[in-house]
Image (cartoon, rainbow, N blue to C red):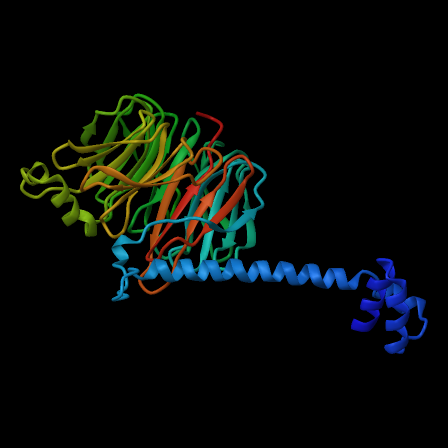
Length: 419
């Protein structure tokens, strides 16, 4: 094989004398079929070797980056505190399949699976360890706006611009219930921590609570004056927070439907909200000093991101804005507290992901993560495994997967066309 390939190379490149000598020395007989088979083989092999060498160099570079990432870099070689791991490029995968912009991506709470929702009216399931597409869930007739798992990962809730909420059996991948009741686009959905109820927010200015077992609407929360953009329950499910086009964030007591607090310092639409985990409370108290301690038992704490380009942190017990972070150049679309409690992570229409050292009220890192708007951000904490970051590019409908750090996963998703 090698001799015939070499002979073909000499002949095809005009080395007739060398070809004749080599053919005689190698004792190659005339065989047109074999000559055709090995035509151009040497060049192909050489190109493959170069390509593999390039891949080896890339992998060596990534290995060195990973080694640097998990060590301090000093002579002691101590491991970094997981609380300080933050995202870093580049992406690991680009997953394509959706035909329209991706609106939300979430992690399965148990398995190595992510689920994405899109304006193409579908929900797709992916294996984030391999980057493989697994299946598509179809049922909605318009853009799927938000998705949420229960804590077991057996149920998935979705909401859509078709004005419905659907409940899916994620083991059989079947829609087991469709809930009707909103009068407009349903923009947000979340399964309550107890798994018995679902909350949804809509452009009809209401928040509704639904019983999982029956699909009945059991409560309606009214008070917002405009489109309710997002709704999220707190850790124990006693409170829900909502954000709206009316430039406010409201916190509701689930048991009574009472509006516990109306937070009003934003100057534009409030796009996103996120509860700070209890593990972050000590750091928040230290960062905010006496301001948060005046109330006796401070917290819970809530983050909000707005089209006014700012991020605010609130003490829900007092309704006080504890800090405002300024730095994004466009609408803030996603915000959360890093599980370590030391950082805030945000994304925006300025195409960046920003890491904030909120104790010092400064942006410590800016990642130019995408070529287009970045409109949502999520996380999943792990105890024993390495994890990755998921990025969703907007207009090309690709899911981009990154492996920047351990102990937490983040997701960025694409923009919606309907503002």
